[in-house]
Image 1 (tube, rainbow over the protein chains, first blue to last red):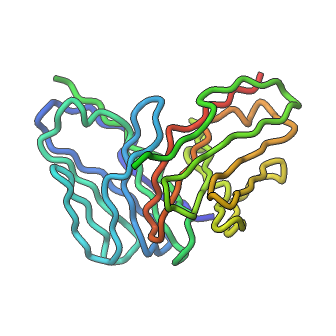
Image 2: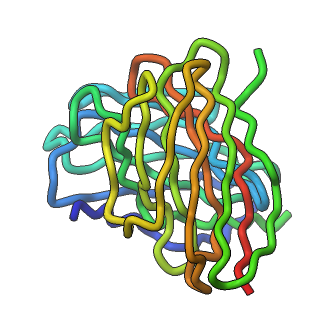
Length: 112
Length: 111
């Protein structure tokens, strides 16, 4: 089945640093979504991307839909303690179908 | 507007039993999807319901089933529980686009 390769698996950074993570796939996606999950909670949608090359920001978060439609990137600028959590990318292949394929997640830890 | 509500939050069941999980979507959302999250396999799609019909299904055995009611609320059932079914089960609702909004999940432990 489809798989998303998300990297890095974990990151340990200092508060104030910028963060970058990405997802790649052998399949073409028509939508990319980025989620954040805190312990004991469900994933929360951060950013949605709908077309190749699209660059979208949400506060300190910026995500891009790769032009090949097989990858996506998420950047977090000037990290703060509440950014700690697990970040997931998700892709949708089938137009109109609510079936998302998820990456393995990037665990972000911030040292104050 | 209330978010996606899942009940119960926690469940402990014995092998061989069955379990039913409930999900109330965001008001107005007609699509409800279910996902299983485990440390080893990550987030995996179970199935999706739209207007009381199953629209998509993931690669899970027939022990996993679901349904959706006319008010869009959904239930998921797992029969003959196995230890490997221990997981966080997440429900997500969608309005029309691809954005899926998740509930807090039901943590199922099979002993």
